[in-house]
Length: 92
Length: 99
Length: 161
Image (tube, each protein chain N blue to C red):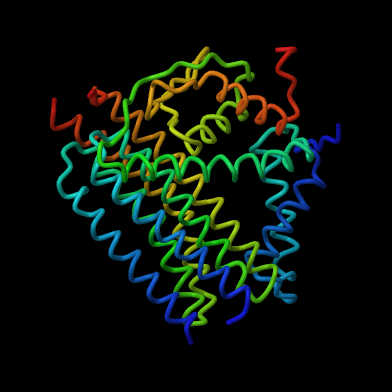
C-alpha cells in the first residue's frame, strides 16, 4: 500500500514541477525559451506515466511512455522548424 | 517493507529532487542556453534514477529492458532538443548572458 | 580487440530481435509477427544505414563512464541552480575534432550535451562549438577524454587520424 501511495505522490509532485516550469514558458522572454516546453513535457510526462503504470498495475501505460519518448524527438524537430519558419515569415 | 522497496523509495525521491532542481534552474537561470543546461541534465538524471527505482520493482527482465529503452530514447530526445534549440537561438542572435 | 561490425546482418538481427523481445514483453505468440518484422527491419536498416564498427569492450567501458559523468552533470547543475549567488559564468568553447566525420561526431556531440557543464551548439568541419556553464573550468582535457571514449566505442584509433 505504501509503495502505491509513493508512486501516486511522486507523480503528483512531478505534475507540480511541470506547472511551475510552465511559468517560464508563459513568461518567455524569447521564443527559444518557449521551445523548452517540448523538453520539459517530454521528460516529465514519461516519468509520470511510468510511475502510474507501476501504481495502477497498468503495464500498457509503459507503452504510452515509450510512444511519448519517441514522439518527443519528432515533436521537437517539428516545433523548432515550424516556430523558426513562422517567425521568419512575420519578420519579412 | 522489503530491501528493494527501501532502495526504490530512495531512488524515486532522489529522482524527484532532480526534477525539482531542473525546474528551479529553468526559473532561475538567466538565458535560454543556461536554462537548457538545467533542463537537459537535471531531468535526464531524474528520469534515470526513477527508471532505476522502478526497474527494481519490475515483474520481468523484459520490463527492465523496456524501462531502459525508454530512458535511452528520452536521453536521445533531450540531447537532440538541446542541440536544436541552441542552434536556432544562435541563428536568431540571442546573446549569451554576461554577469 | 573484439569488434563487431554493424554491417553484418547477424548483428542487426540480434539487435532487432532483442528490441522486439523488450517491446512485446517476451510474449511467445508475438513471434509469428516478430520473425518477419525483425527480418524486414534488419534488411531495411542495411539499405538505409551503411555499416560501421562497434567495439563490445568499448561499449562496456562507455556505459559506466557515461552513467557516472551524467550523474555528476546533474549534481553540478543542481548545485549551481540552488546556490543563492548562482555561480555561473557562461561562455563558448571550441573543440577541434580528432574524430573522423560521421556518426561518431554526432554521437560525441550528444554525449557532450549530457555531461557536466557542456552543451553542444554547432558542429562544423573542424570544430565542435560548445556552450559551457562556467568558462573558468578546464574543458579541453575533459573533452579529450570523452572523445577517446567515443573513439573506443566505435573501434576507432585517434592517433592514426
